[in-house]
Length: 144
Image (tube, rainbow, N blue to C red; front, side, top):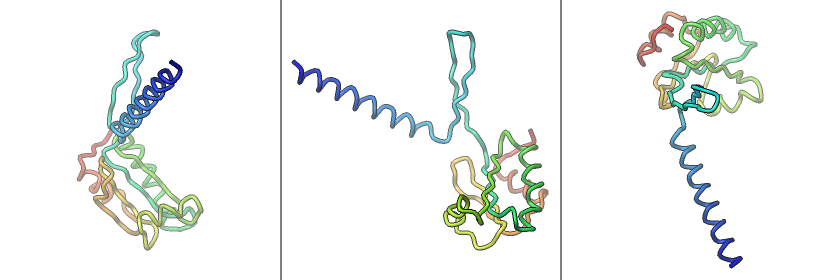
């Protein structure tokens, strides 16, 4: 009888683990948004986070990189619902892995990922906001 209960517990545990792993994979790239209807009821909806991820690889000590800071802030303010702005200082220990991951040769480098995480555009050097906006519009990004 004890062996039967142990096997039953083991099967339930494995089943739960498989369900959790599968649900994590199927929700990658999504954002869970909870909307309360009442104290006792919660409705969960799924929405995609961003149309474009704009990755800035540079350094806070680099002059052209410093010139990109207001551009990044402006893009975030104007397109924050559709564009994720992500800065990595590649001259720090925390930022070095991003320089390796994206294989950059110079800074600043801007990398643009579509909603599936695939790189669709790359630019090296200072990138004027007007030109940067054209790259965002390629993926249907509009002003907030």
